[in-house]
Every structure is written in structure tokens, then in C-alpha cells.
Image 1 (cartoon, rainbow, N blue to C red):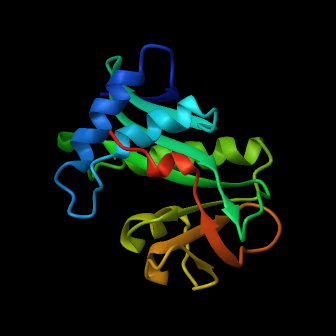
Image 2 (image 1 turned 120 degrees about the vertical axis):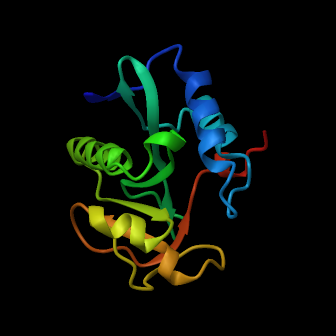
Length: 168
């Protein structure tokens, strides 16, 4: 089967929402609002990149990228997430493929970097690092990661869009 990565299209919104909710449902750290976050980013005009992985024209994965601030300033840095892959297709490289394509597209947009909060074991394979220089709301530093695309590594407090406070 061939996996294709493409930009979200009109009509994908509900499929992305349902996929995201299903992928996060069994996760102990899930707020249960990940689908709502994507809808809120879209509504606020802050969904800079919304990429889907498809197989036989069915959406099986999704990743969102949106602007972030560091110490209250936006400087062409973006946040990765939420990211989701259909349960029966997880651990097959689809998520990493989505991330790599997103990073490639962010570079083309002139982004200086990308940050996220997540498990190092998952994201170090695509180049993300955690060195304690970037922090986020009391989350242990090991979960706050970044990938510098140009310029200097970030230092300060990471803040995601207000859309991340969205409720279902």
C-alpha cells in the first residue's frame, strides 16, 4: 500500500477530528480535547500546516503545526501537534513521515524552528532535542523539545496558541 502525504482539504475536517479523538482516547495524558484544539486552530486562522497521510484515499494520519511564542515573542517558531495516526497503523513510520514533511514545508516557509511537548523516545528519531533551555508550564524539561531550522536554539518559556485551551 502506498501512503501519500498531502495538505488538508475542505471536507477533511470531521475525519481529522474523529481520527484525532480516537487516537488520543486511550492515552493517559490526553485531555480529550485534541480534536477541538485542531478545530480551534483552524477557526483562529492559526493552523499554519495541516497535513494528512492517506492510503487508498482514506485519511489514516494527521499532523498540525501552528505558531508559538517564546518568552511572549513570535519569531517564526511553530509548534507541532496534535499528531495522530489510526490505531491499527501506529508504529509503522507514518507519524515520522508526517513530521518530516511538515518540517520540510516549515523550512520552505522560512521557519526558524519547531517545538513540541512529548515523549523523547518518539521525537528524537526526527531530530528533536531537549536541553532544559525551553520550558513549558511546569512540564518536566525532558518533554519540552525543539528542532532548530535556522538561527539560534531557543531559550525561554514556550507558549502555544490559546486554541490549546479549547474544550470539545
